[in-house]
Image (cartoon, rainbow, N blue to C red):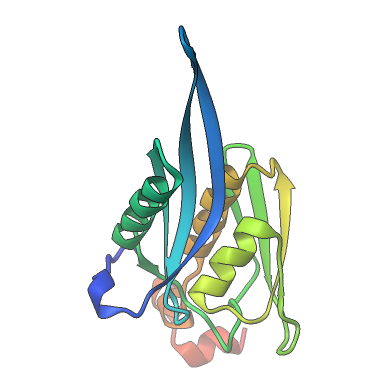
Length: 168
């Protein structure tokens, strides 16, 4: 699951999830800087998340996009949804992702919706538990998606065939 992908080989789209303005109080007044969270994905199972900080919004987004492209990972999708329910946690941010039947759509809020759309999930049910801080929610969602494994990997780890796995 930790395999890295070349961003130049994929047709990536980007989506800005959150922009935060922070102020540093100095002798002459306030100095503002910005942080941005960006999600990139190809809509076909590849997604990456990046955080960028700069003195201008455009530069923060550019930095976040470059970091996101370096962090692209492959996520297993099954018929436009995830194979099974999964839970992710990062700090105080907790996320539950549940598979949904075809036609349900992406039932998700803010940061989770952005990641699901970029990875190419069309039907999913999600719930943010605990902190709704976008930084924590994005990392918790990525943690949850990293936990997903395809059926072949699960069968191999259990030492059985794919047919035996589905007859349990």
